[in-house]
Length: 353
Image (tube, rainbow, N blue to C red):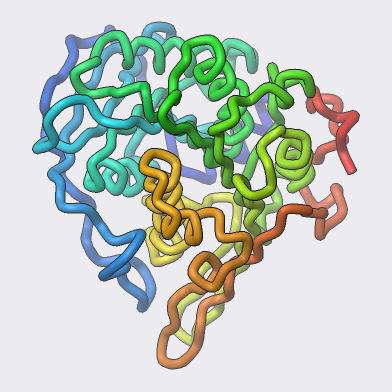
């Protein structure tokens, strides 16, 4: 890795590690204070359908990271729900070591009645394999420590950038080695970085009930879309159970909804794109994967259906529709990106288009 480049790049996200301290005792049943209800931009949250906020109160339990000294693994969950809940394991981008960076996403998941595990890993000073191990050990510890919250029969892996690339190897290990997700499993990868620990032979052995959304952003200049295209095409998930989604920006007279590398995040631009582009599709993906709802499939994996790609309008101007395909191809030269597919850092470099 290139530590100086990574530090310069991801300080942009304003996510600092802070000073390390001794681990503290687990915090149980802490009710989370919700973020401001007013989204940036003129378009508000969905009032109905997928993407609408759930009715549960968000609570949180945390415990010391098993491998990252001074850091806490956090589980957000619905306080009023009884029994263990289906769970999403979230892998953050470089620099996103604090849950506040994307707290809106975790709150949304918990409000809808599900658990989500956030596990910090070091941005610098360790290898990629050590970061993967930190994520894995944290997820395992969450399952072991809190069976009253987490139901591993229905499982999703979700990640952004480094975490998007990592979600495939982590999901494969969970699905095949641990048996998690036997009653429902999916992967939701965003702005994917290089994927390690993921040979083609492994990509051909994902369980039959695995679903996939791969999402990339048109104005991303960090991660080459070819990394996401490679894994999307090589994985053995049938076309009917996966979609490759390109998000483009929308320019209104008073506000621009951006489609850059930092989508989604709650700190710099928490707006309708978070809800309609990310949360809405995730909400439907959960319902389809875990409950078999075919109406939900038409939103999450609609193969370009109107219900999937159409975004709201403001004063007669519609936001740019999502572009969905099962046969993606790159739109830009590799030279556009900080991390091109053909870099020697990419363990899957032979698959670059």
